Image (cartoon, rainbow, N blue to C red):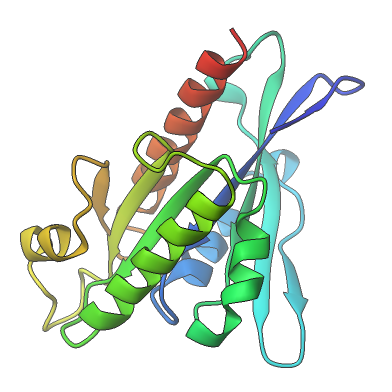
Length: 195
């Protein structure tokens, strides 16, 4: 959370985290393409030799103000490949919430579990209490054949009672439901923190 007093904005960071090719980038591209241009910034891709991070920010007007400040969200993705652990931890630094994007396809369970475990470890190292930190789960690629049943994914990942949405980032099904839930969870946490 960063407060820009000059603009009256409360800058909040939301990171899309998950295994490689789970749909994190597709989520951000879908959201960006369907957010009015006057409410969003440019979609920026930060590339190094082998990894890529997407980000953009947008102003959510319907949420109302928090402590007389307008919430402005910055959305980030992390590189999914396991060998970019340091980059993923760096991108999580300063985050106010996480959307964990699960690849629902059969055969991807181990990658989902590894990514979930790594995310939890990074958040703990960064000083977050993961029992109440805003983590929203998106079960992506539900439109594909050969997906693991949602109940089984929830059980295998041990996500507990965290909000969970089935989605297809490619078609947009569930994308904005996930985002809205994540934004509401982050704003609720911030309201509690700045009382």
